[in-house]
Image (cartoon, rainbow, N blue to C red):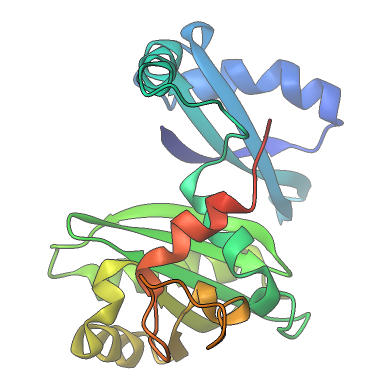
Length: 226
C-alpha cells in the first residue's frame, strides 16, 4: 500500500470521489483502474488565494489485495475488518490523543527495523503520514521536514509532542537522540497501559513493562473499515 499527500481544490465529497482517481494517477506507479483507493481529508488549507483540501491517499493494487485474501483463506481465517497501520496507530492511542490541547498535534513515530512510519494526529484525526528509512543517518532531518511541512499547512495546531512506538522504540538512546534533535517533548507509548492491570495481564506481558511494539497490533484489534 502506498500513502501519498495530494492537494485539491475545495469540493464536496461526491466530486472528490470522482476527481481523486485522475489526480492520483500522476502520483502512483500503478493504474488507479486496477487499484483500491481510500482517502482521508486531513484538513482545509489556504494556498494562492484559494481554499484547498489536503488529502491523504491510500492506494493498493487489486492484485496485492487478492494475494492477501488468498493467504487469509488458506489460513482458514475470517475477515472481521480491514485497516491500515497509520489508522491503527491512531486507534490504539485515541485515549492519549483526545487528551491533548485543541491547538496542538501529536506525532507518532513507529520505529521499525527497516523503515519508520510517521503519523501526525490532531484530536484523533490524521493530518499527516509518511514512511521514512530507519537506517538513514539523516532521519532526524527528515523528521524535522515532516514537522515543518505539517506546521506550515496547519498553523493553528502545530506538532508539540512526539510518541515513540514500534520495536525500536525500546532503544532509549535512539529515542532521546531524536527527541533532542526535534526539540519536542517526547515519551515512549504503551498502547496496553489503558487495558492491562496486575490481575488480568496476559502471561506474554510482563507486569509493569512498556510495550511500544504492540502498537499496531493493538490498534488493529479495535477494528477498522469493513
